[in-house]
Amino acid sequence: MTRARKKLIDLASTSYYHLISRCVRRAFLCGDDKYTGKNFDHRREWLVERIKLLSSVFAIEVAAYAIMSNHYHLVVNVNRRQALDWSDDEVIKRWYQLYNGHFLVDRHLKGEQLDKPSLLFFNEIIAKWRERLYDISWYMKNLNEYIAREANKEDNCTGKYWEGRYKSQALLDETAVLSCMAYVDLNPIRANIADTLEDSDFTSIQERIAHFKAFTTDTVKANKLLKQKDNIQHESQPAQLKPFGGNHIKHTIPFALLDYIELVDWSGRHIDPKKKGHINKTMPKVLLTLNIEEAQWLESIQRFRQQYSNFAGSKQRLKQQAASNDVKWYKGTG
Image (cartoon, rainbow, N blue to C red):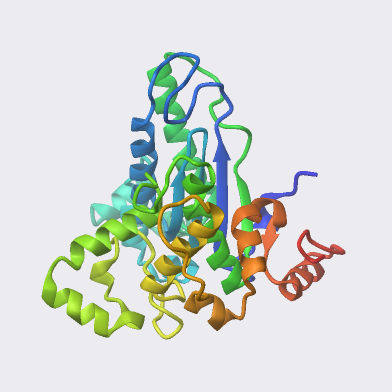
């Protein structure tokens, strides 16, 4: 049964969410359409560019993404505190990047003094815009509607482009965040359309690796980073993706970048035993730190969507979430 979105997005429980949208029409979102012979790879660029634009406007950071032939995945982090700390002028500036304004707001921007009733209404407008700027549904609306308009224009047609509303999974703990990000980044390898992380086009892992390699071509910077493996400088990571850092660095993904790359590469080689290269039998550092069993991890990164429903996490966290939502259980509790 379809549940109200407000029951699925619970920022008091977690700020991390896995989001998926699927194309409704036969024509591919991107890639080669075998029915028409057309290639739609350029639409991947539309999506990545739009995702990054919206993340510069909303208080919603992208931790991972994968753009596939007829659907896409995002792992996002909602920074509600950041939005609440914005000044009114900052909220206005961000909102005006996407929408037309309001005459009262325009008067404020011109430096006019508003009377008391107008000021009260102005404050209501800003409060509404501020709330929407950390709202996942508004983020996805701005993403999907834009892509649908551009695709319909290109296809010279009208009608629905996306398959109903987007799907969401709340990631309730660090293990759920980590396994979901790896699941997303490994999509092309699971689908047998890429052999390596570097070849996994239009994924966040490809972007992170390329950026890191470009940054470390500078010998001085490379040596500095190698000495500080657990504290990778933000300059070595893409500016428009949420950075890795560790639990000791605020506002970062709570793992080291190189540990994550090692983990995803190791996981990809286990998913596809035909991949070139030696599979290191040593368990990655992150799995040892979080005390995750190898079989449990490999099951999760291959069947994450099937393993959980709208909420993902340990059995204990799922039971707590179910109790708080006054339901008996959530898929994944066993």
